[in-house]
Image (cartoon, rainbow, N blue to C red; front, side):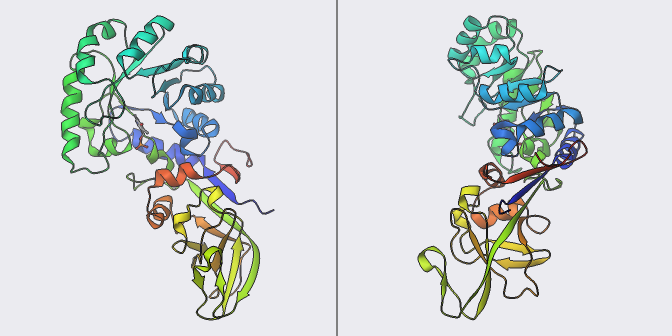
Length: 352
Ligand SMILES: *Cc1c(COP(=O)(O)O)cnc(C)c1O
């Protein structure tokens, strides 16, 4: 079999959630947008629900409907960050999703299309990306509060930089906008949880920390990625490897060719920069990342194994992100659909 194996540890995700949930007195939700950061919301969602998560966050109503199918009609609430878009009403109703309204137009649409249906409000406190602006919220505040929102939330732009002045500024604006509203409030994602309890309010919204990424450096690793060796070869000094002949052997070299490439989310910017691991021994990638293949120098190995590890105990998602010049979020959400995905954990039987 030449499919590379992506192993996702559901127990580690649940353990990370428990640690983040125990960091303050606030309830912890769970952000599972983008198919649980590429790891599979249909598996991750139920695992988090078993761990005790009750409020889930997705980006789109369509994602919410898929998550509802995986969770069933239990006590779990599913919030939609993009709010109530035209055409969403039947999905929101049928899957019992709670839109976080972002604009006056969404508020009007929601009241007209789904009167009485639960909603929350997302407020812009300075990120200027998504959420009701302060002046619009002040204008609508009394009628919105009269309709009983489930949640008032906002999002921090710089939570992964604890010393950044935007954090305190957004905190003060959020406090000001939500004062005396009598509605549960939420400001902190993973980075905000780590900023301290004054950022926690009633509900936190960890995402990346659940999946083992920075800034939650104490997280348990969640992902392992093993790539099978398809071919071994000798490359003589002076011969080159891969597209563009960007790497030329300086000495007689033994290489292996592995069955994964940029079509699997192994970013092409890793060309000539990544390290793979044969157990505890590092092996450098040589030449460019191809669509389906990687080539690795294994001259120094006593024996060539049947696979090399790209993400594992010696190299986490953030290490790989550093080598590629990106962030762990992008490494995870780029993972392709072609892997043999295996879910490990208490409730799993193996292959998924
Ligand atoms: C993505 C997102 C989160 C989760 O952020 P992490 O940094 O992954 O913890 C929380 N809230 C909102 C509004 C988001 O868009």
